Length: 95
Image (tube, rainbow, N blue to C red; front, side, top):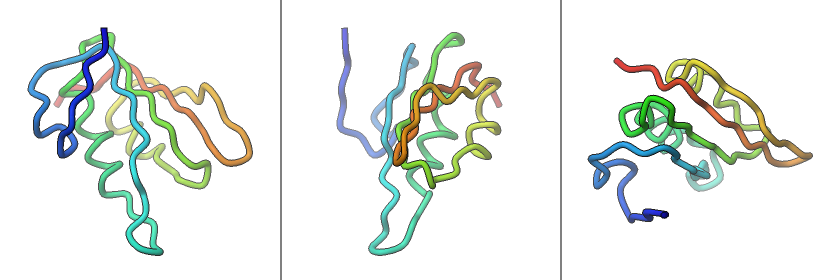
């Protein structure tokens, strides 16, 4: 089963899931902006089950490791090519 919702990041998502998949936008005009990615990554642990995972698709030049390490115990790059990377983060840290 898949549950897809339109939401301002997690505003309309009160429950927890096994998997969150995202490709956060990073453009603010011609500049790079990590604001939405920060909300998605840092908010994910509160919306994941204990064994849940965040899978993040991003351009390779975007460095999200600091955010992922702050929010998760384990980070694994599961795919990358010349332009993109796919990262799986597990072990959501609870605050």
